Length: 258
Ligand code: PXP
View (tube, helix red, strand yellow):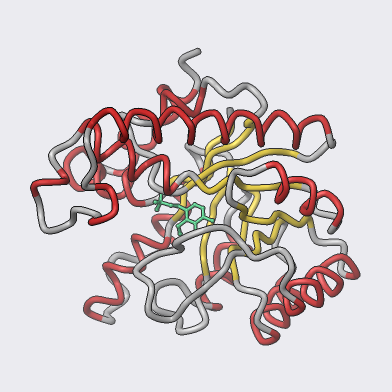
C-alpha cells in the first residue's frame, strides 16, 4: 500500500508565525525519500500551503505530487498552470477546520472543473463519502482515482477507543450508548469496504484518507482494494516526539504489515 504524506500540517506551523520556519520544501524533500507521494491542499484562503510551496515541491521533489483543491475557477486555473501529477478535488468551506466530508458530485462547478482538468490530461481523483452511489457517479464523471473519506470512521474510532468524549473535542452527535457506536463503526467499515470493492470493479484506483492514525489505520489496510493512503495530521503530530523520518517509517511499516 502506498503512502502519501500530507504536508499541510507543517505549513500550519510555519503560518502560525509567518517566518518560513519550518521550511516546507525541506520537509517535503525529507518526506520524498521515505514515502510514495507528497500531498498538499492549497486552500482558497492559503491558510497553510500556497502556490510557492506547490511550485518548489514540483521543481525539487522526485515524487508524485497530489494537489488537493476545491473546484473553484481560480484553483483550477492554478492547477492547470502547475500541472501536478494528480489533482484531488475536495469540497471546501471557509469556516471548516479541515475537510468535513466528501464532494457533492451533482455540483455544476465540479463538472466544469473536471472538464478542464481532463483537457489538461491531469490524473483526476475525487474525494467522496464511502457510498455506492457516489462511487458510480465518480466513475461516470471520468475520475481515474477516488479517495474515500475516512473522517467519519476516524471519529467513530475515537469515540469508541479513546477518551475524546471526555475532552472539549468531543463530537456531540457521537455521545451515544456504546452499542450504538459499535454498530455505526461496523457499518462505516462495511461502507468503506463495499465502496472500495465497487470502485475496483469499475477500474477506479482507490485511495483513502482523513483522520487516519497509528491506531486506527489497521482497519483500513485490511481493505485490499485500497492502494494508497494520504495521511497528514497524525504523522506530523508524531514527528514532534520522534522526528519526521521515524514518524513516516513507522506509518509505512504499519500500512504494509498485512
Ligand atoms: N485526504 C484529504 C482529501 C484531505 O483533505 C486530508 C486533510 O487535508 C487528508 C487526506 C489528510 O487528513 P489528515 O490530516 O487527517 O491525515
